[in-house]
Length: 490
Image (cartoon, rainbow, N blue to C red; front, top):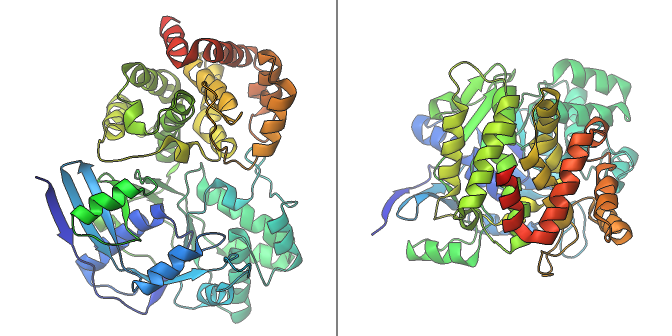
């Protein structure tokens, strides 16, 4: 019999202190849960949330509105132990993208009004790496992207997260209001600094005085977030129905949750630390640890497992050879590149990650993790590989992962079964396969020359290029088992 804990939501409020951009499953299962716990403990209803989707999923926005903005989060410690929380802190859901009728910006003005409201003191984001419109390699704003170009041409009717932030801040400055704090909760290194970079570069193209004001007055703290939240499946909804939960907006995740935040909130913040949030002066070590060890391991499973036809993380770590790969990668390639606070035990952290991956209640699909690889690889693998090689180490696990990613972007697995490649560079990568697919060395060289992904110094490192080419040949000729066996012998 399952051990089930049920926790109802607190009473609602019409006081909006936080605006969130990116109304996805992770936001609803992470930041909103911390805020719900805070509200339940303190009774403080001044931090209600307006949460907005910017480009897609107007159906979720409308469904939350129909449900009174309440939904459930099921937190599974394993298949037998689950906590079901009702969440009520999202007081308003908005949509500023293009709906099914083709209309753009349905709720954009309402969202901008919230950003300009004196009550709004914090804006949080989960828009994925590509939602910041920065080159992964250079950090420069992608000014030629059609959406950013549109925001430059018509800044009062923005389409993107940076554009919304700039217009919201411009309205506050014009009204004589203090700026809100901008808190990125996306999985990318220096997420606060990168958000600031995107906003300032966009503001520069609009108004030099506005740019200077943002540089001097707006806080952009960094954060690290951690909770495995798979995309919902029919199996998940069926399991919830067995628990008596009939909620189309429900989210399933693991019981584990972590949030590390730089404490820089000039206009105030909830007392998150009482709910277990780690408020620190420097989040960078924790952020890099998570990106290289957890997210880097996830990406290894995503590309290698997908090529083998494996569907989920749990299925992947049921294989001893893949567990051995992850343990070797984390301890020999990732951990040596990390500078952690005293007392951090990276060996214990690695074993805890393997235990989390083996949670049999989650169906974390590898295809979900594999999305946007060109945006994720630099911070998950490549920066660490550079550091490891510079220190005299070797990176055979990372090289195998890169080889698997290259092969994955061909659009089929090792048996020829099709899979979608959801990546901003998908068409360019497909063209490289069409041009060089018959010659492994030429294909690898062509991929390593993609400067939007690979730092030129790493691509030019002979040890790295040779390791990737060798791994690619072994993987494509001998399959996953052969590649893992060859790695184990190395």
